[in-house]
Length: 468
Image 1 (cartoon, rainbow, N blue to C red):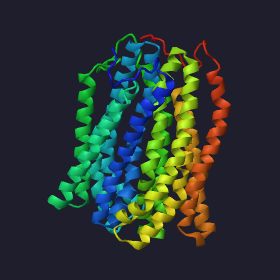
Image 2 (cartoon, rainbow, N blue to C red):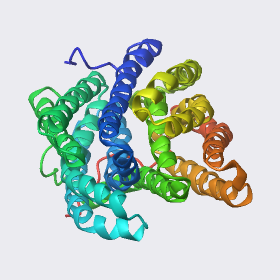
Image 3 (cartoon, rainbow, N blue to C red):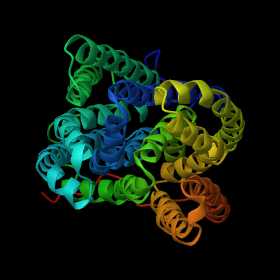
Image 4 (cartoon, one colour):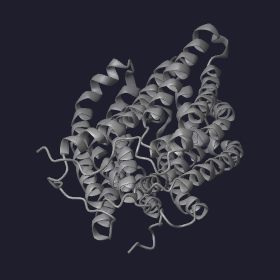
């Protein structure tokens, strides 16, 4: 029997499911942005150097954990398809092995990050107070990696079953907890940037404990154990999980590494530009994150119906999802242009130069939330079909083919534009990536939708022969 919070992805009307699935994860995306927004707000109370420090090292932290997060996202499409095929034992085997992989990676990244960060910051060429503040924040925050990844893993397992409401609840818990703990750290205990890091660590521990407890105390469509049945080959499960998940992992990691490089490139423009870039990204993300989640809501819906071979429902989900993303993207773009003034003034704390940079950046790049919403919906559709290489290809094109070269071209060949070269490049990269995605989608997706009733074109997920 399905829980009230769980959508029936195989039988409910698709139009109703689009809203039922999308609204909770969009709210979760907005709350996730609020979480980062809160950190930026409290950092701004400390000063511009602290804001720049967090902005500079966050890509390092996220880049490492993205490698494990991508595997969780890839696992959603595999497990959701198995649920649609009514192969619960195999779904259990995949979920069990996925948890073990994420646990191993989380511990490795946490320990590695703590010891490698000092060397890495020096290698990146930052020094002085910026180096000191960044080092304090990052080394403490790496202790939260296992809990953060556990939270993301279990959220992904909930999503694979259509239980989207849990995502917004857990994220809301994080926002409230982070706000309270940051307030205590800065205004009661009078801590500095270390207080922000400790607050984040404690918040993620609480989130992880809650989501794990909820998962194991409630009914699920599949079990998750510490060892899977000998009926299924662990080696083949790991190969499948890495084959689907690694493109997503490398895609996310490369994007955050690219943000780190961008920070390095714009440092000569002054710490105000680095801070403005970080603050502008936070403001943009208020609409960018919810629009990104539109696509993530489609993944279990498409994957389960694809597993059942209900291709008419798959086509309808794709069509309605794209329309929804266009409408939301347009509305979100206008909202961003309205909120940039009060939020920019609030976050820059009276720094007129940083405030001007923030307005310019959001005023140019904020409009690409339209392209962002459509692009991530198309990307999620490919992920639903376990064609995750599209995500890697498109993000590599955006970062290494457009964004990094574009910023460097503006810097060295049009130096008079100064920081505007960065803002223009962000606009151009997002827009051109959408063009690439639309063309790729038009070529690759129709064949996938035209094979109703035929055998899977992707690796069959029938029970695997045991080899161990």
